[in-house]
Image 1 (tube, helix red, strand yellow):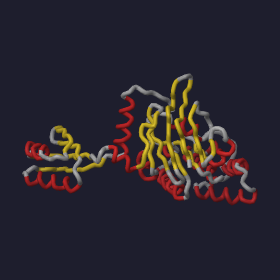
Image 2 (cartoon, one colour):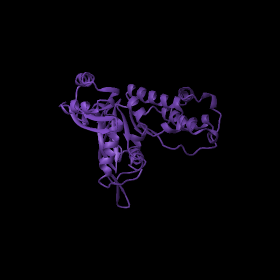
Image 3 (cartoon, one colour):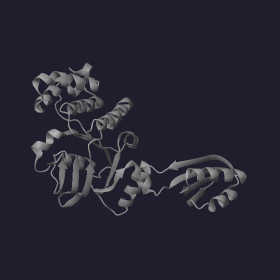
Amino acid sequence: MIHVHELYKSFHRKPILTNVNLHLEAGDRLALLGPNGSGKSLLIKIIATLIKPCSGSIEIAGYDAITDVRTVRPLIGYVPQIFEGYPDLSIQEYLEFFAAAYKLEKSQRATGIQDVLDLMDLAALRDEQIQYLSLGQKQRLCLAKTFLHDPLLWLVDAPISLLDPQGQAEMGALIRELGAMGKTVILATNYLADVITSCNRVGILNAGCLAFYGGMRDISERHGGRHRLEIEVISGMEMAQTILSEKSGVVSLQITDSLIQVESQMAETETTNLLKDLVRGDVTISRFQRTEYGLVDLFLDVTSAVASDGGTSQE
């Protein structure tokens, strides 16, 4: 559905995005992560045809998004990070304006506007001027506007932080529903909990490079099947160390006071047997916890690795 190939963008001869490649099919939901200043918003704006890249190509639904802008723009729904403009319009007037701009049939506009007002829980505020709306209400309005022309590609730039907890949950459900409808979504955010529940692919930008790109399964595979064990020992620390040192699946261990932190490649059954061996060895344990490496670990691993190379960028 969307192909981005070797995308490059610089400002004042300073590289901001470097050789970005990604491919998404209909129904894919990509979480675009990265530290502040990594280039997430810039990449979203380039794909939205608002900024031209210096080089590279973007293809959306078979069309060249750089040279065939007029054809591509109706296929795109862009939700910016900050809602701006139109303070004196009411919600109703704002949606009527965009319904006309999107060239919706006049006979369908009233129904379409009512549908998106209901969907975004804004029907009771239809006559309220935009300048009096809260940040969360403005974000809902922007989403409502985007629904009007039923785009194939949704570009959503971190609106989650402006929503209340209920709105955040609804946003995650909305992204999943868009995927089920065959829409392609790129969500620029750093709210990792929402990413895990709503997206099926992850890209991590750092220093202008796409340092990681893949599916959720690729996250665990990146760590080679490793996981963490945390063992809180009340008594028998010396015996615990001996037992752990004999286990082939133990990659490394670190001891801080009564806590043993283990990096392990043991299967779940082997982990269970380890606990039994510790108990049989008269090791008294207050906590035994296995934690899989996940998105947070990947994010920290990728960003710290690239940061150590001294790369810089801007949002």
